[in-house]
Image 1 (cartoon, rainbow, N blue to C red):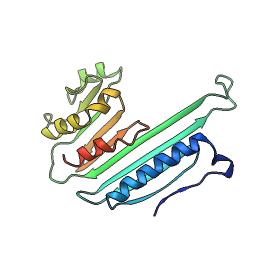
Image 2: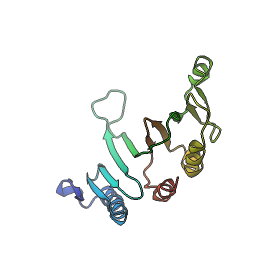
Image 3: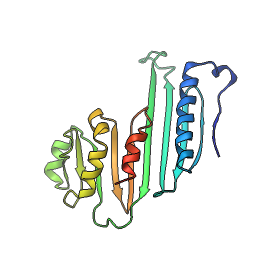
Image 4: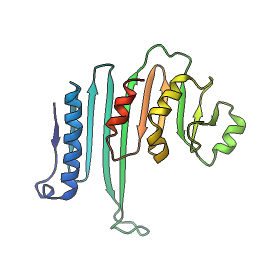
Length: 187
């Protein structure tokens, strides 16, 4: 399968359409080079694309972008737009039992959460994030942290969850980050 346009004919000349088209073509080329499968749709306002890679291990990569406009609100200008972009990478990592964890952005309420829940602590790799785990920080977390250091520093990491042998990484980014993904393949 391939990524296809679902745009209206008047969108084809839009610079936003061309930008989303280029993003999707680069994604499709990358997945094809990995001998994977790709599917998705795009237009001037959004895209939703999914790639599956089977070698060296199976990964699922999902990229979504939505541009929302607010209309009919007394409080917000109708010219205001909200952009939602997400990147989700997931894979199964068998054999790392008893090492479940969640890394997420720090919230204001975490000051109190840490008092009542000893499973939550500041992430040593970046002070803007916390880790929730019942176990000591494992080598696996350190390796992921080193690979994703760039997106930790930029604040693009939304959450990293490892539970039931499934690793799930969610970013809020308009970039592919193929270079970081390539490094993750080695972890």
